Length: 490
Image 1 (cartoon, rainbow, N blue to C red):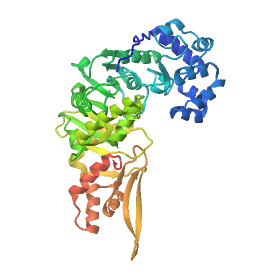
Image 2 (cartoon, helix red, strand yellow; image 1 turned 180 degrees about the horizontal axis):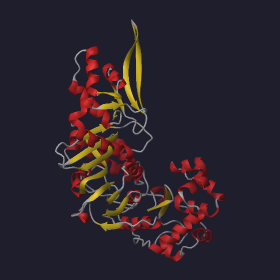
Image 3 (spheres, rainbow, N blue to C red; image 1 turned 135 degrees about the vertical axis):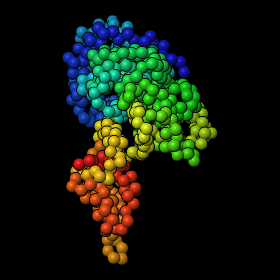
Image 4 (cartoon, rainbow, N blue to C red; image 1 turned 30 degrees about the horizontal axis):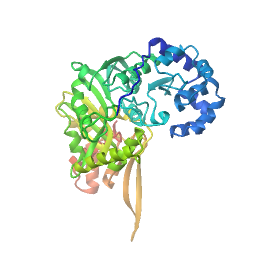
């Protein structure tokens, strides 16, 4: 597949400033678009159904013109485009592919979050066909999910590896003093420069593969949404394919990232890993880790090979029923079969550089739905791990409480002697909604965690009621509940 023939645009500071002025004047913001379209048409647009948005935008004046131009990919009248863009030098906009000579959008410039805009290439729906090899992906599910999973605490320096259209660096502007962003794609760097210019964000942009451009530097925080698609070692699309086979791209990032963290620095990665027949996925991913890191692997989904291949073909605008689609799918599925791959895991990796001897490495599934962003939970998990490391030997002497957001659910079954509990399950209602099945003694132990008695006294009371209590097992469970925010020190 040939790379895009377009010259990489030069979205200068002046052009970005004029576009920003035009967007603010017309109300071309996330809130403005929602108000103009209404919730139903806005949701339809998110599902890839443009006609309701097209109809709703007819009475929205200059804002409607920009909606149809940049979000729907429609051709508009020259007079309407000039009026909507206002202070923008139209010749400059055409020369740099913001719009085309036939009054269509040349780029996807999309409102995002609170008065932000993101510059990317037109998607397959807007183009009416497959995207080119050097396509720069815009705001997608993966980029948004990583942004929601990232801890947002003030840091001095932050590195965004493989910035693409610049979404992660844009979010970093809310909590990082200095931001560096890298990418191997010259086109991605050009469009990311436009994203940062529109949002008046100062970012150091450097070209190169992986961590090579910052070989001798360390950062307080590193984020990375790498080309993590797994399969044969090839590059069909720069935004998703690394040229490395299998899950080697994710492994490379996890292995190399800690060397670029300052002491106590945190890295967060969106990653994929193979589920190979007869192999534990947790053993696979923890083998990627270097020494000296706390690590939290959270598996959000596991896709079977057929679903995985079809999803990524359609993402690139390739019809799986077409000759090209059948050929690509066949080669991909053959590779999965030849390598005994049963599924592809997907999730988040949080790494913290530490000089502590006893590092914490946890792998767990989090495949149920939840509403809250994972970022605050990530920060809380890191704090809990630090607390447990410092107080581990004093755990039994600690007084704990159960947060009010943690409930105990009991499901009973009817027997010969009436109803008896069959399931006891702790539910945390906030954050990622952790759940834990517990037995009756554990439920009673937690009922006694009111901040009055230390854990060792509660365990002694349980022992008098239930006989010998396995203290080591109880303390292990307490550690897990502390990590999950279901027990907190009083």
